[in-house]
Image (tube, rainbow, N blue to C red; front, side):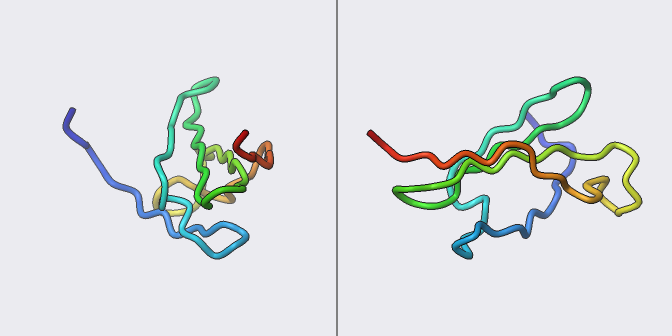
Length: 75
């Protein structure tokens, strides 16, 4: 797979950790990119963001809205 473009992600978690510190996932839902981040170690929050296609921002990210925020804790 060859990347076509890169988008800088500068968001941080509530603990100040870059959301891209740990592996992340991206999927397409209803024609929109949806990003899943779980940046913190041990007890973490799952951050789910969706890109706005008609955003006024340079990279199309726009007013990134947060969907479901779930606290995850390992068993």
